[in-house]
Image 1 (cartoon, rainbow, N blue to C red):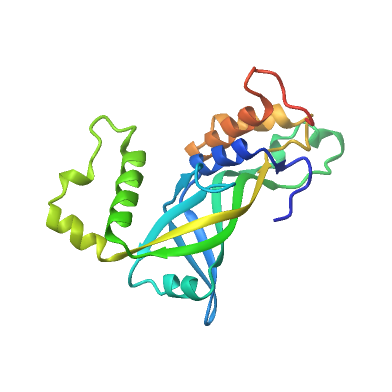
Image 2 (image 1 turned 180 degrees about the vertical axis):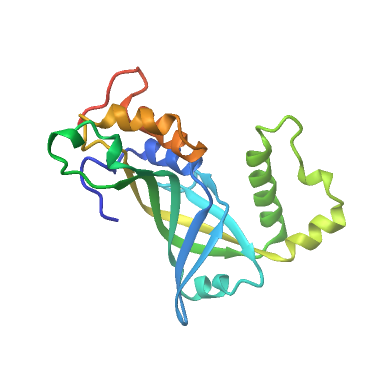
Length: 219
């Protein structure tokens, strides 16, 4: 991934944070007819291996798991917040008019070797952990145990587990760092927009502030 220094994310914990806050992963691998891709929920395990693992499942009817058994090298693209940036938000527009639209976003590319899992116990554990993670914020979280046991076991037979052992992490935050004179105006405009735009405004502020409330270097 092209990562100019101002946008590059190199700290491992920062990369993990972007993964945890990101949406489902776009899993890309090489198949018989070219590239295969699936959108799948994922679960990060920081403890396994030097860089951790990403675990997820796909439908057994999805042929991608078969191509991963033959060619395990894969890429998981994990998108974060993103929004269109209008040049009308730039105070510097009045100076010379030399401004153009752009897009702010965060993203992580996770490279690794995939292992395919058919073991029912492994799959049950993954589904439970995924469910618990995404239900945790709800007032009345749904649990796997709320479903009939036979139904749950039937559903498990319809999926295949994929464990991605991470070999390389690349992260990018493109959040108007290159326009310090326009940064506050952009963030202010986004903060009154759609939910997605407000997410980008929050990401801009989080990028600028470190854990102690001081501005990060390189702004």
